[in-house]
Image (cartoon, rainbow, N blue to C red):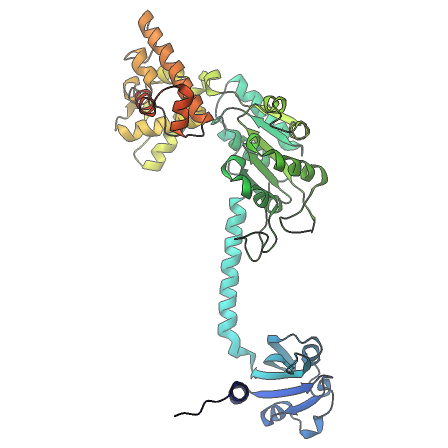
Length: 470
């Protein structure tokens, strides 16, 4: 039966074995006491330094002028990998504190891992490669946080569009807060990017946060960042919030009308004081950020209903720009549709489709509750469903119920029944779309709002060609 070795003896043997291995593998070893006087050095180190036993008991700097052994002995903190210059030579060294059983620092021990720095070339090369990859990733991220759109991409020649571009260009020359108002799909994000790209902050980050898309419990950390371990599941290293990421540039707050009241007060303070306090931290950080906010909701009505702070509304409503719905600028529909079809043709490689007059008339007759975004989705659906190089009103029948009601040529006939059918279809579509939006896309809830069964709602959605998003 083997005799068991007590833990203290085992630990001492482990330490001795480790020391012996390090001593055999390294080019030299050195021990100093708590006052950084040399207590011992092995023969290899003596030969490396060209010294003898006479240095024992003397301060380490007398033998090694550039030694940091005193720093380790006094601080108790190791220096695990370092380059030490000795004359014209460079040594790769490691330094560790020596402590007694109570944890008191008694001195330090150092090892020369290599007597020539070139042995580290593979490690240095690997580090350089990783550093270059990191820099490349940072450059790509910086590029992703630049303005993605310009004013030329906000399509249309109507008077309304010309006025919007005039106001937006003026806003780009200022540093004031901009509030973009308009229905969903009218191009608020595109205009926000264009304003940033035309401003003096164009070379700085353009950071976007969709308030409605982030759970309320995470919004504060998303905005202001979080200290290490600020909450369960938080990053151990902490994380920067959108304000910090946008420092020096522009922060686009999309769907600001959906912000909880509690966070509105904190946002107001940031806008006033220009400083943030990360979640779980007591440290204030100065930020320089230009705010562009957008909403599809009526903020003034929300203020009256006590669902949005009046003081925050006034702080945001410095340069308001209202984007009209597509149904109020039908003269722009043809040029917008042609640009969309050109993009789809380039994307698919099948060539650009064209619209005949009946298709243009049908598109102009439709109400477009989803605006340009819905127009893009409809055209993409039609292009996918038919290979025809020229699109007609007939190709739109399966997508837009208004076309089927209006007749084969896509124009509204003078027949009273057709006009009534068209009006009813538009009204029904608008009511269902509004209910879906209020219910956040939850069809069971939307059906209850409309007073019909869920099966009936699905039937009407399919019949009217309403998109799944509502």
